[in-house]
Length: 372
Image 1 (spheres, rainbow, N blue to C red):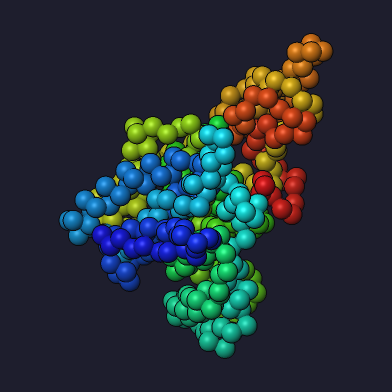
Image 2 (cartoon, rainbow, N blue to C red):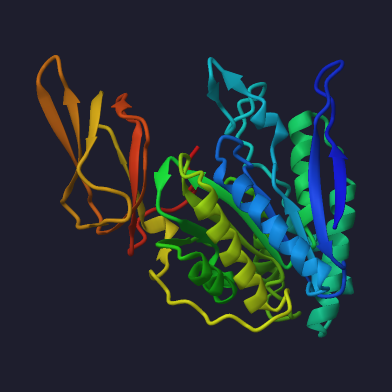
């Protein structure tokens, strides 16, 4: 295992943070798999899962069973990890800019599209090498000016040549669910099976330039741009894995998640050994554009009537908002049928606050599909 330290730009005199990456196997000897945890720094399950996975990878490397390179960044956001306000950790947005740590990554495909046309041909593997080299050159030409920009630049630089990019997150309260893109569904399906995902949400570009989509989306966008002229592979399968809820930080479940990821790596052929049997699929994928976010119509105490993982029928009451001064209870009903896959962990709602998400099967939204 090789451990690397990547220094971020110093935001102030006497202060500098770093990102640590752990590299297992041999670069170029097979696929490159990249996994990072807690880019939203207050979402901790990913850190613990990768802690357990590192042990499994170290043992696999010791027996020379890794075919390729596996890169682990267990703490992807040291900036957000240090942001605490009155005992509350706040790791989703950077304090100084207000920007989401998981938005605004570079569109490398757009940066290289004009320069690679004359270099592409009929050989798909050669085209993949040409594109990755151009992406590396475009990335290296970017000059970050702030600590946040240097964090984004560092993480994207570690992952831009990977065959698979997994960004480990969690929601407030949730079942394990996965976000990915339709062009990669064939590749992503085994991952969702091994993880036991109870909801899978697909979108071909959800907006916001999130970390995984900035990397995976470049390939299908290049394919669409060049049409049938050149064969361009879907060479970077990206997925955001939501490891249940913020409070689901347990050694036993994290160890099991790590083992499931290890089994998936073995199934994919990155780790030598008997290929594990493909687990059953626990859900069918649904469009992210079909996901309904229920919002509080009034302020008050939130009393959920449904739990995460339950199937909801359109018209069912999911929660009540109680005003103990007026002794009123306003019902909040679903307008789509599907799995309630995530809900808020706060139990007092201000008017308009997001309460929960239901994975419907029919797309009804368009444009920007992500939360703030």
